[in-house]
Length: 183
Ligand SMILES: [Zn+2]
Ligand SMILES: [Zn+2]
Image 1 (cartoon, protein in one colour):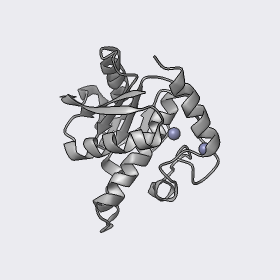
Image 2: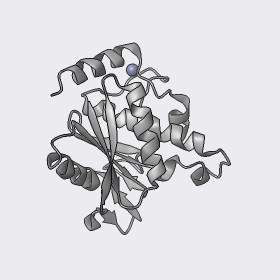
Image 3: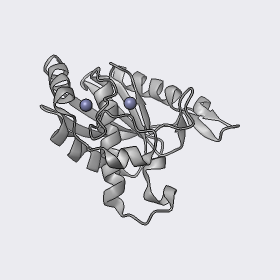
Image 4: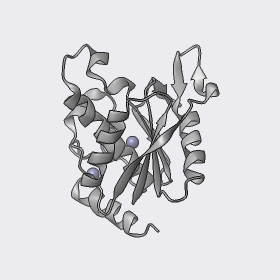
């Protein structure tokens, strides 16, 4: 699986590079690269009364980008603003299930958001888990009941911290099968 990592708006490049390094360790037959260009945050994604961005609007922009970069099987958009999805106060990310585009937000993954003093390793580990989770959705995987599986739904950062960056056996099998049918 060829994954392109895309900055949507201003995102620290070192985080994108860390993701590009980590994802091939989780997904079989996978290579990652970080796009040099970034796409702007779509202006119509901002919802003034919530002071948040609509993740679905941003995700559809990532989908458009993915469609014009056919050399990539998947595009992971990374954004650093607070995002929500319909019916949810906030989300860590969103993806088409299945599809070519996924999105994660770094905003609520930062230890500082919770007044924590944890270092950047905690932050990167959270970002990797959310990236694996959303890319898992693009391969058709749904939420998993196992709390340690990366496909477990994160209702809060505690769930994210509790789960691993790895798939359970069954989800790994399903992800591998989906990847083997690409290209
Ligand atoms: Zn999910
Ligand atoms: Zn699972």
